[in-house]
Image 1: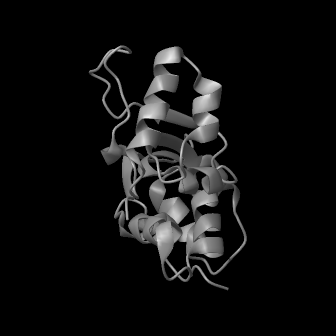
Image 2: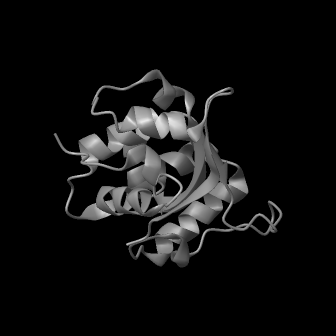
Length: 167
């Protein structure tokens, strides 16, 4: 299963506020979203298949897409069988590369398999991450399980998202 989640920048508390004040507020026993959650922003770098990205748009409407091989110019950039989580027929890879050469991005996006692995950067806030953990943190398998597990494993986020995520 392909899924990586790394912190692109640490949580940034709102100006004039301290992380300690946020931690105290988050652990005061209140379960509702508090304004600091919305104001504490961060960026995550995520590598995941297209299927996960489509589902994640509910939480992350704006994504900065990154090229898998930024060093390659447009002429030499091609899709390969290794760009997919699951095997795809060689004929599909050839067809997708033909669409790239023709500049048919719309058709390419319609035909690209759900297992195509993409890299993106998400700019979000603590409240959204807490919502994800509450809504999807109980998943026992799949990409959402891996995503939530990796979020919980990021030590910089622990003061913001620790505690029981199930209600």
